[in-house]
Length: 595
Image (cartoon, helix red, strand yellow):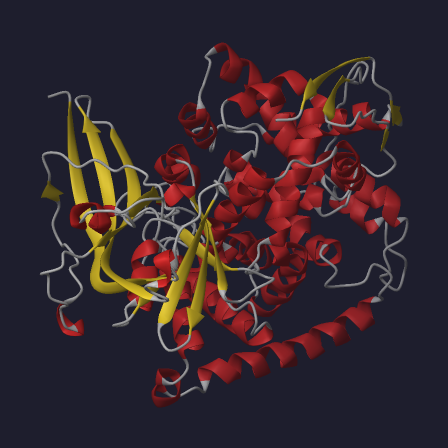
């Protein structure tokens, strides 16, 4: 045969009833129909070894002679794959219908099956019996409520989480929203986030739906939420305009709109200006920007020089503290010494908090244990090829660990999330001081905090803004990505999450970050950097007709091959090109019906 189909029963239980309020001939007021429920994962292997999978939930009525099993024997979790010669799943009609049914017909009268991908919500109710009500995306199909007379609702939901994401509805805590990603995303997610060092999704292929990714499970949650939102709505043009205004302040976009139609506008942004990069700020220039008491003067000019050329390395230890807000620009040398003394005392007080926790206390503090475990794992694989962190028992690793643990004391709510060690590593490398590195990290995390929060609102906003920006800059390329299921730009996720830390060489990361911290030419330079990279790669992507997988693979393989100076030059040119078009008027447009 050209393909092989394997089935795994994820969950199976008897004693699951339908309470039919059938009133036919007024004979029965409340008919209890006993049945069993199963969740089955179906995997199809083609001759070329490609793998495709889908999950199905089915309920079938019990045979009359079939006894109800006790609770302890209800669950049948298969540990191995079962090969089945033939199984067919068909949607049944759920209405009672007219006319009498014989016994055999009655058995199949209520049976139903649906794909988990067709499921929209599950409503959980706990009365005398726990019950589940399933609502499909196809609203024309209604399903009966299932009552679990012998328990097992939690186990059923746990099994469903192996093939879908269940999240509580904001409007109704008894309602679970069901999200499933398309198969291409689940197949390619590892290519997006993982490499030899990152190691965040090494279990994804084995179990792509329940892999928690440690603290990075928020990435999975975000992707599910993003796809669910995409299924339900499109952003109106005026909202896209507001988003672009947030990205490039001062930009105004006029939109035309007709009811039921979307205006597709091609905009002539004019010629992109030629931009040149400058030289790094020298010690002489830095000294010339300080008054006799140590205050930094002419800060706008200083930031402009740093934006155009960065800093020479010997200045970073001092200037980064100003760029990150650890030291105020107008502070004197004596005031900065006082700040350092106060911050040193505060740091070691927080460090003592976790250092003084006994083993017995830690056994009763699951959050501290989880943070410590994640930090220890991440520290052991962060920038180990860098001389500052290489080797066994490296003191740099000890400092990295201690700073991250102390940050958990500083921000109890957030704690530690995978990826944060990547943000700290360059700071500690430059500062070479535990206290200074910690407070610079605190300032950096103030900017990046939303990227790591439970709802990942920062990532959602940035990807939406980036998509809107790319749509304005290059509608043809944006449409191409959209046609390849890549319009969400999730291949840029890692870029934005840890500010290109895994895409650039270590020296280039230092250069990019200090340029971004100037806030020039706008607060969203990182989005312009994304556009700059994509602008350089779009020709290859389109000419080679890359699909979803190929785009992810190509973007991932750009790591350590990017020229930061060329990227920054083009990013600045793109910003100037957009800002030079203050009021963007449609020059050519056509309409299409909204799908």
